[in-house]
Amino acid sequence: MANSALLPCLLLLLAIGSLAAADNHNGVDASTDPGPIRLNCGASASATDSDGRAWDGDAVSKLSPPTGAGAAASYQDPSLPSPVPYMTAGVFASSHTYNFLVSPGRVFLRLYFYPSDYGDRSASDALFSVTAGGVTLLRDFNASQTALALNAAYLVREFSLNVTSATLNLTFAPSPGAPSHYAFVNGIEIVPTPDMFTAPAPSFANGGRPDPMPIRADTAFQTMHRLNVGGGAVSPADDSGRLYRSWDSDSPYIFGAAAGVTYGKDSNVTIRYPPSVPPYVAPEGVYATARSMGPDAAVNLNYNLTWVLPVDAGFYYLLRFHFCEIQYPITKVNQRSFFIYVNNRTAQAQMDVIVWSGGIGVPVYTDYLVVTTGSGQTDLSVALHPDLSSRPEYYDAILNGLEVFKLQTYGGNSLAGENPPIPEKQVADGSVGGSKRKTAVAVAVGGAAAGGLLVVLIGCLCACAVCRRGNRAASVVACEPEAVLEQPAHGLIPGPTKSSALFMSAQDK
Image (spheres, rainbow, N blue to C red):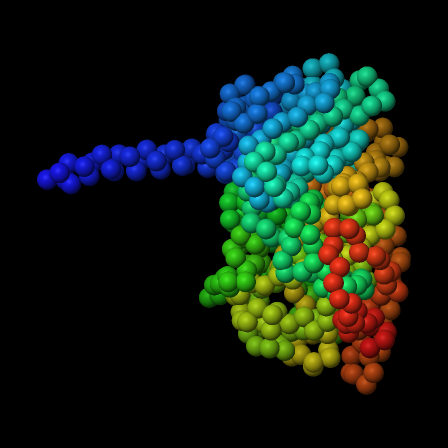
């Protein structure tokens, strides 16, 4: 009888605990919750965005007391995905630090920017730097100029940081040089994540040594591109692992008219995540669509399926390729084998997805490092081409998803790139500082300009040569200049030097 009387009380306590846990998961109280934190800067009340995420306003938040001035944007661009968190901002005339209570480990830090006039402050006067955990994320950042260069109304900058204490300090500091400079931010999102970057150790894609190259656990990353290849955009609400990532369509980055073909999985194919690829690596929507070169073998042998991706020069980059065979009859080894080229160097030969994954419907991913030199903006090129060395059944290539992450420099502990130049056409048309653009930026493109002139130059430099491959019956299109071997960055752990046949140019094979 006594046990029967206690049962309702226990059920009530369990219900209260469940409600508290659910409330904490939405990031309401960071003092007890290691879950997501979302701050709608400058807002006076909590609100929900179009993806169903709850955001705390400055005035009611327990996350970090506000010391800056809240302000409302002067205009709501129709391309904004939601008024939250873009229509209000925290505006700072002097350095301001947020102190977020978090659990140690990796987090995604996302900063949301909507360049607009705030009160009597002009959008063009916002010039500032951002640091977090001792790493400079942005330096002399001009959100208005960057948005104009990218033809975007708003910007999202996503970083992955390894937090080693119970507090993450995030500082916004106006740049010196003019009293009108100020800093602002519309939204701050912090999402705990597994460590998805440092293991397994990636290989160099452009001939660097040692190979593979381990990455230090404390390395900070910036997401430059996250593409659902062959499919549409995947919203944060549809991401896996409750990581709330945005996946963009790859179509804008395809080089030239040869775009291959896109398709979804067969209805009788089920995406089955193996232990080596947990579901949080990428959502099913990424692995369930793909882009291939097409059904015509003769056509496929005479072009590379190529993507051109703008990035900041002078950094190391981690490129993650997602693969999954999703249509019959590709079920066996050596039905489809291909090259992966990065910046016109062979990153991988004999890429057979069935060999790597173990079967149809099974995802697999592989990582490569690439070095860029110089300053300003540059382009990374990624290309696929059939590899005939094993005499595969089909002369084709496939890709399901592609991510590009910038690694911090360790001399200056920085991820900051330069502001992209405004395209000459906008300057000539007098559109600088004029009406807002309509295109939204779902994920940070890291200060890189997508200027058409650069694409034309890449096309001129990478006019592909048809090269004979010994006594084989077909030709391979390849464009591989001599590799530039770089010394490892301080964030990369040196290992034993060894040679690899994967980095031979097509002309040498």
